[in-house]
Image (cartoon, rainbow, N blue to C red):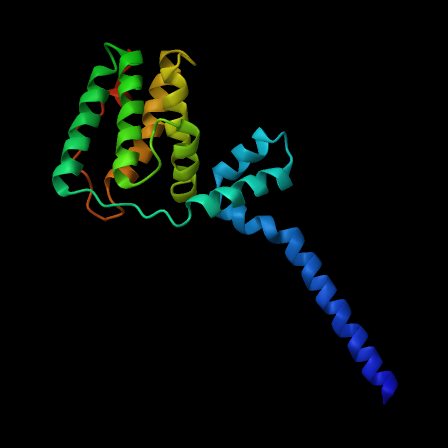
Length: 191
């Protein structure tokens, strides 16, 4: 009888050890799923060191998980939508200026929604990545293009990608689409 108890105890300890080891090895899958492409970008920024990248992402979650977005009024939503449409419309004639205006608009919109102030782009984009990981890269691309990184085609692509974040932020998470005008940036062969 004592032998059976010892065997069962050893088996339970071994099972617990294996479960703990498995949990540690697969722990990154949850954070990888939560952050999507942002996970891959962070791993790349850490030269492939997944543990360092996961530590950074966990730290972002701690800092920004409790952030609560403040909703926009319907008037503010319409004003932001109109401003974005004007910015897109000016892209063909002044792409660098349009990108700079889009960057400022996204920073101001994020700030109005309750994200950290856009004066610290890194902090603001980190907070946005916690809540909008699928779309934050467009904001990063517009911000980089504002500083002269890339040609006109790169700026056009950055604007298109940033529009995804804009749409998510300005929609307040509702199913109501924001009134949109045709996007000159999309179809322009001159961009």
